[in-house]
Length: 131
Image (tube, rainbow, N blue to C red; front, top):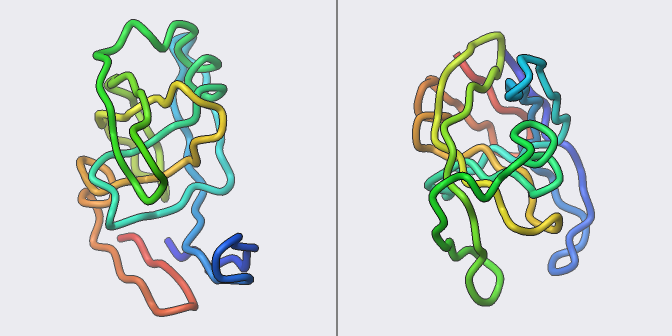
């Protein structure tokens, strides 16, 4: 499946093209929750989900294993690790995901049991192909 890069505003560099993809997450209630702009990030070890999405699909995000992650921003972000069923490019798989204890955290598809389940080809500034 092909995903065209999307131009977005960055506080740091101005306008930039990003590999944003569509992801669905299976909720505790058995319903699929869709996210339209999830960053496919090969630099991210694990998939990251914002708090408001985690609460929608799991209700109690704090039932997961509490830990902390660091990224490009300052300091640590508190997260709760859960095993989720995710669907990307018509492929369904289980993965560990970090549910952020913040609504400000971006939705990111990371490598571990996510991007790495695909043959991924990033074409600079143009598209991401997941096979």
